[in-house]
Structures are given as C-alpha cells and as structure tokens.
Length: 220
Image: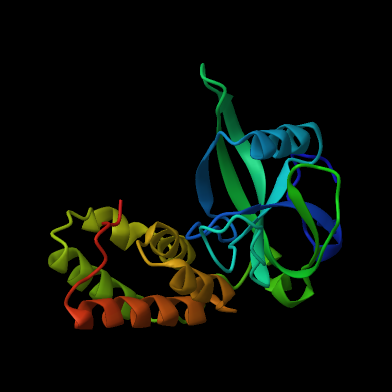
C-alpha cells in the first residue's frame, strides 16, 4: 500500500508498530491529534516513521509518574503522520490522523529507544468502513449535554457550526477535546460503535456535571 493511500482492510495495516504511550491523549479514527515531540526517543520514533509508512500507535499507559515503563492499556489507535514541521529548537510538531483502533497482542523486546508492539485490528474492522458512520446515535442527547457543560463552564460555542457537523465528526471531536481523565478517555476509545461512544460521552459528562465541580480544563 502506498503511503498516500487509505487502507481498505485490516490486512493493509502494519502488524508491528511503534507506540507512543501518552496519558489522556485520545486519538480516534479520522480524528486529528496534534503532538509536540521533544523527547529524544520519540523524536527518533517520528523520524523512523517518516522514513517508513508514517504510522505510529497511540496507547495510554496504565499508570503515570513512575521511573519504570508502565504497562500499556490493551486498546490503542493507529495514526498516520499527515503533517509535520521542524522547529528551531529541535522539536517536531506533528499531526496524527486516526486510522483504526487495535488491540495490543504483545509488546516486543526491541533495540530502538521507543517501544513497539504487535497490533491486532480484527475486532475494529468497522473503523475502516466508509459506510454506516452516521448510525442512529443520540445526537440530541449529545447536544443537550454539550450545552449544559458549556453553560456550567462558561464556554462560548459556535452552535451554528456544531449543528452542521456530521455525527461521527461531532462525537469524535468532542471526545478527543474533552478534559476528562485517562480512564474516561480509555472508555471513549473502547466504545465499540459510534452510538456507544456517544452514550459514554453523555454519561461521563453528566456524572461530572452532577458532581458540581466539572473539569477545570475547558473544551477548546
């Protein structure tokens, strides 16, 4: 498969992938995730990916702030580097576009400074399906919850643009930009269908609103 072609089947996706363990970073199929790369091991990972198929996996670690590498969550999302730029201070500004979720079958022992794993995509084959992405989800519930969240956090929302946004783009953008913690982000990632993801997004937001002390970071 050429580097500029979109994969049509899970067989088109790489089995061995470099992984970027980053807590609270959520990438979903067809979503775009900007990354600021500065650690030497991840600079090496991006440079190697650019020389190859431009694909890396985003996976959340199971814990943060430890000196030893954390175990990875079982499910991550494969992304393709669709934009990158060098900065004057040695960093790389990268945009990943989500392709498909995967299950980590095994983490490999490697000589590279970054981690690699064997990825299995079969249970997420619908992520490559170009049809059926506007399934019967609770769009009204998503908009109602978003309005309540915006009012509670004094956010300004471009409602005209929101109303014109297709279901998948709306739910995925809200999920990826949401200020929720790692476990909530993982639940959004692992929701199998768009309808399920919308339901999880509504439930998590309603729980935060019911607590009366919503997330300190606003959607932006």
